[in-house]
Length: 376
Image (tube, rainbow, N blue to C red; front, side, top):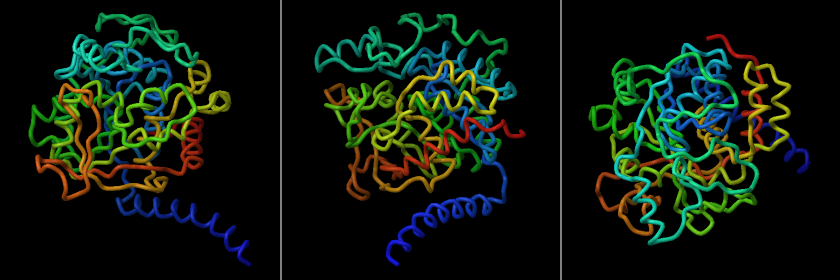
């Protein structure tokens, strides 16, 4: 009897989560949820662009636009990758808005000085001059010119980016749809910081912020990417690239903030066989993913998945969160306090995702990326 009950529980619990997620959507009146993704969309393929594709494939997501700051690569090269992705996906109606080229304060030279004082960084995004030799990274050679757009193996886009800046677009849209827009930020938070300074109402007019970034106490995975935080568990690239922007954003009056840090991503990995499986899918971009996809932890995909279906979260905590902006060994590190114990400098409560149901998450990703494109 005990065995049968345990088996029944394994079947019913995931079903209950799914039904609850459906109830939540129904309570919203069945309307498609408005979302803007702010993404350092380096490609082709990659966690960055696969996260965008998941939103495009979600039937209940209304993607209003994509805003692009520098981060994993330079902004203009990322914009080009994103435009080409939208062409391949058949979603050229979605506007792409170029954002910040540089962080607010941090620079490549400051980073070099920091490394002389405190040691080499494993990964520096657009500033990474020498790439690891693990064999899993394929990208254009390093270049210091932020406006150089090297040829992409996926081809050059014919469509153009919007002339409206990312920050102006973000501000305009939250005024157009007050209380309705989720912003999913999966790169450095520079665009959001600029929007916050352009309009003090920006954050309060959004529905919520979901961001991928930060790190607490991750269990190092058995892959080369764990080197970024193996000896610095509070360090993570998105926050480290522009700490000042991240700190500004985390002090803004958002109605709700959800953080997906490194911690729950360490058990995820986009295995090579997943790309082979996607090559047999029915989405217009599946051949693109099968050709250009590379094995990475599923960082940005997880942030999108948590928003699409919060029931995949198995453990979380509400903390006060900030980013260290002192030019010390901890520059860019994640700071956190239990609610009620912070320094009282305007820290906001953040729902921090600590663990997820990885099999359900992986199933969601593969299903979204292989199904036919929904009507839009």
